[in-house]
Image (cartoon, rainbow, N blue to C red; front, side, top):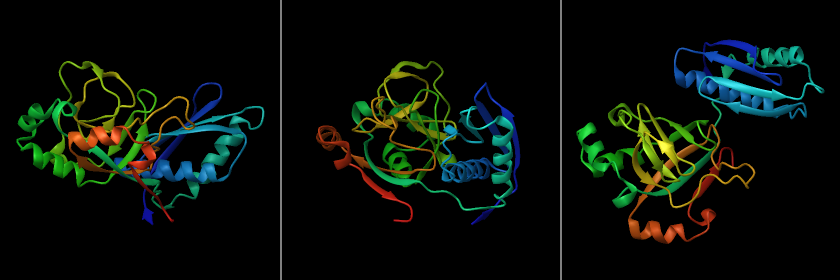
Length: 244
């Protein structure tokens, strides 16, 4: 149980959306508050709620105005916020994921060694010792923002972004880590890659990770990576669900 102080502002966001902005002493507290609010709202199983999109410090709620008016939605959100003085930190699925941090899958190895003044095996060991938390899904569909990167692994973005970052690349920039869902431009420093897709528009949901999930990476070499890439995704990852 986490006791936190926060301030919330509920405001319209387009014709069928409302946004809850959360400010708190730390980003972690704001994120925990957002996740808890989202969990409580979804637990109501209201047909009028079309979708929710949690982020670091805000929750976007899209609704069907023919089933629920905006004023009633805001009253409901305020009621839920009033119940959040004591917050159970929500935990989603915990993933243990193989990843390759060598060869062509780590194109920024040398730059990161210089920037962090650390040998590569130490960087990889440190990165894989962390249990990351999925903070948000954005800036393109399925991009996974990961919180929990320690200060000794913080680094700057590239001065000139790449025109193409391969799908499933693991990268870091600033105080965050992330996973690219598909080939796209990007300026984060790439240090590894997953041997499976993390986003498929034909799936429901299309992104396999969700805000609140926990991720831990397990390093594999290029030979094992190639073997894992030929196997079904469910055979190469370990998944556990909180409370089970």
